[in-house]
Each structure stands twice: as C-alpha cells, then as structure tokens.
Image 1 (cartoon, rainbow, N blue to C red):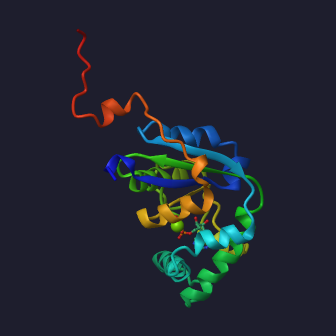
Image 2: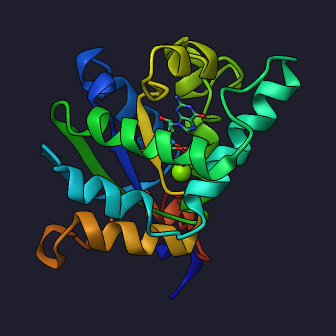
Amino acid sequence: MHPKQEKTLVIIKPDGIQRTLIGEIITRYERTGLKLMGLKMVIANEDRVEKHYTIDPEWVRKVGEKSIVSYDNKGIEPPSRDPEELGGHVLRRLKKYITSGPVIAMIWEGNQAVGIVRKITGGTEPLTSDVGTVRGDFTIDSYEIADTDDRPIRNLIHASGTLDEAKKEIALWFKKEEIFDYRLVQEQILYDVNMDGKPE
Ligand code: GDP
Ligand code: MG
C-alpha cells in the first residue's frame, strides 16, 4: 500500500447532526486534501457500538485511565479509581448516545489520514481540545459535567485512533461496495512526482 492510500473512519455522532454541523465538519476534513471514499447516514444499534468500541480489547481500561488522569490534572477526585469500572460506565453510556439518532459515517483517505484527522478533530474532552479543532471550536463539554449527569462526553465526532483500529472499524461500518476508489484531480498536486503545472 502506498502511504497516500491510508484510510480512516470518521463518524459524526448524533450531537453533531443535531447541532447542524455536518457541512462544517466535512469541510474541515475535505479542505486538507484528504479524499472522501465512502459516506452514509445510519442509525446504529447497541451491538454495533459495543463491537466498535471493543475492537481494541484494552480500550475499556485505557478510557478509564485517561479519565482518571484528566480528573487528577484538575485536582478533582474521579468518581472511581478503578479504570475498568470507569471505562465500563463510559461504554454503557456510549451505547445509549451513539444509538440515539442518525450518525454519518465517512472514510477519508490520504497520506497520514489517521493522524491528520485526529489532529483536526481535537482531544477527547472539548474543555481541553485545542482551539481550531472541531471539538475545541464547536462544543463545550467536560468529563466532570458528563460524569455527573451519567452520559458520555458529547464531542461531535468519532475518529479512528490508530491505523489498525481504522482498518477494523471501516470493515465494521462499510461493505466493500460502499467504498469508492477514484482519482481526484488535486492528487496530482498533492502526490505526483511531476506537477506539470506550466503552461505549454
Ligand atoms: P476519542 O478517541 O477521543 O473519541 O476518545 P475515546 O476512544 O477514549 O472515548 C470514546 C468516547 O467516549 C469519547 O469520544 C467520549 O464521547 C466518551 N468518553 C471517553 N471518556 C469518557 C469519560 O471519562 N467520561 C465520559 N462521560 N465520557 C467519556
Ligand atoms: Mg477512540
């Protein structure tokens, strides 16, 4: 596989749809030069959401650890110090959240697609996501208020965390015939060895 063929999965979560940010979010990824290879609106069931978040068997523990670190950094006591317990709560809440309405699933392709998309998406907690990222610019949620109200952080988007996760997630959300391979004219400028932009 040539590096320009790296693919990643993005899901606009139900809050992104309800906030009418579909166009804005797609624009952010599209204008980087990444290529849209597949796009659909679906209502997911809980089984798919569970499969999605447990593709990495370590995810439940990792998500719990991430949350504890975030609480500690703010000097707030987390609701539990057991990462598995905290992660388990997050998964239960996520099932309810992601199935609560339609979502938009997309595949974006291009050099370093996974990393580029994560950078544009921003960190998990909108309170600390960088300015200029989708999560940093368009929402205001925090671990603290989400945990208090027993819901997941509403951060508009899911984006694959690693190349391996991306491959498995794409297979979970898309059939082969829903993925379109085609050439964009701008790829000549992004990747071709000779740009050939001179007038004759
Ligand atoms: P992401 O890759 O940045 O989306 O983050 P993770 O894979 O770690 O977590 C998946 C999703 O679970 C996040 O996008 C949030 O919606 C939610 N979430 C993660 N950690 C927590 C938490 O500690 N508390 C709550 N309430 N929600 C969380
Ligand atoms: Mg993740």
